[in-house]
Image (tube, rainbow, N blue to C red; front, top):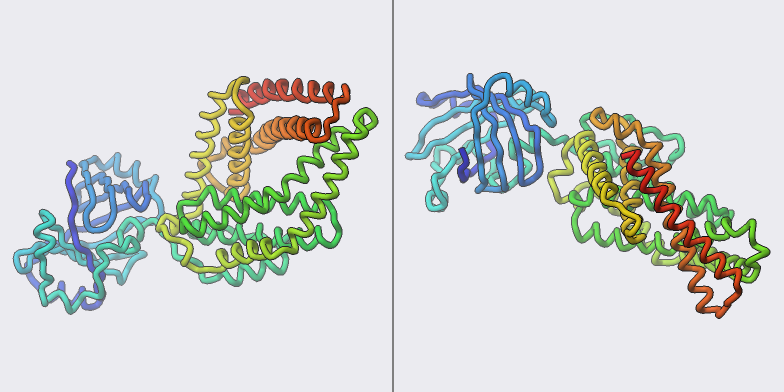
Length: 460
């Protein structure tokens, strides 16, 4: 049965609520046990045992007015569904009574939410809600009105975990020894805190490899720098709905700028590696690329000491250090294990669907998008290796790396063709060997497309 639920909700003083119930005679009490197995800030699914009845409930919306649908189920279905619960089982006694012509429900929680009490009153329509005046008898036991605060919904209380108080200590451990730091995953950590810990690790590595590259000018350090920037970008994107939109966009722009300025050199490096065996055949072009490589390396060094780069690092650090200011969605208080599992499944399905539709005639952009998604899936599997529900996906993670490399090679060849064409136009070099090189690259490009489609269909 579907209907609109219109209700006010109040947080009560536990002791005063108990005394109030003991002071009145005309009430009925229900024993309630319930759990949730689907949750977003605007959608919940729960099962409830109400005395000897079993009910499946779906709620849509948030705040005072929500859409609610209920369905009676049997004990067998109830036990099956409650096994899929997210978070904890809520147990409470509900006391129903009438006062000033209104029907009230007072919940006294037990077990893991002991000492918590709420008062609820449901209205028939908006007019009754507007005309409602809280009886003086109840004002004394009320702490505050929480009708619009999602942190006090039963769903949030069931599925959420508080923010850890040890985050600063964890940060210090990571900073002191990032290579040997191993975070002991706790089942009761929320996704906010778990993400912050993992992101902080990547952030410390970014700083470490920046300094090392400026000191030693080693390309491997620059590679590790890029890897950790990619991981930060990937995780922010994967969990973007739990961050403040403006802050997320600002960080994304900064990180994208860093990626662009450091990735161009990588394209030249890969091309030079490919040409190294044949550099005598393309001597002028090869020397041109070597010159560009040196210029780009110098530009990266200058960029790493610029105000723009320092500001970007400051913004990331500030974001990670803040407790709640940048986290606007109650979704982030949910268990890390549940959210990680959900994200892996969703992304895996997206990749599988995209790959099934892939053809030789598709643009390189379409191939590149799938490659990025596979990379993001690998990063998710890296930080959620303990997922019980994704064993099949996790066991294939090494195959995904090989598949990602195939997509990467295709993208590299495309970039090489672009670099070569630009060189021919800008330099006006019409040497026949360059035309032959372009043909070789274009043939490799098509062959790689075929290999990707064959590998993809096998692995997915």
